Length: 215
Picture 1 (cartoon, rainbow, N blue to C red):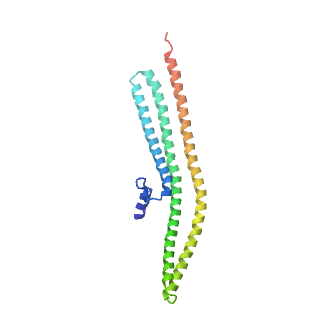
Picture 2 (tube, one colour):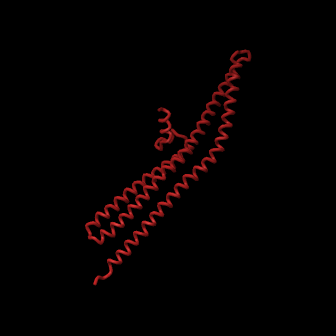
């Protein structure tokens, strides 16, 4: 429970000093995309409300306007659905970003462990230097220092491998989330374009027909 709380605090934008400063730009990006998600969902809701209100108003303005604006309302609602669909892609995008963040945090944990081991190694070496060569603690301190040094060497190799792997991982994840973003945007725009084309057709054809002088 405490670990989960610490993780949430580290990811909180209101308490950036508790997290890793190197991870802050990525966390800011995740938060920014969350804002986009919320904005798209609100826009979709507002679009639907406006389309419904248009239909209600037209229902009191005669059969002709009710027919034209009723059809227009349906087209606008279809675009509202497209906005909702696009907002849903934000979840997948943010999961890719969070995966990078988790990997970054795991690497930072390795570096933190290495820093702690270096501190312990320095302490063990100082104790060994202060011990008399005839002291029974001297061998123990030197053995401890050697074991810590071996652990540091193992961590150094692990950190080096992870840093190299992380670069490739970031490239793959960034490509994945940008493909989702642009693919979803294209889909949304295409649906919007279709709604606009049919909307203009409804308005132009029906209005032109109604504008013709009656005999």
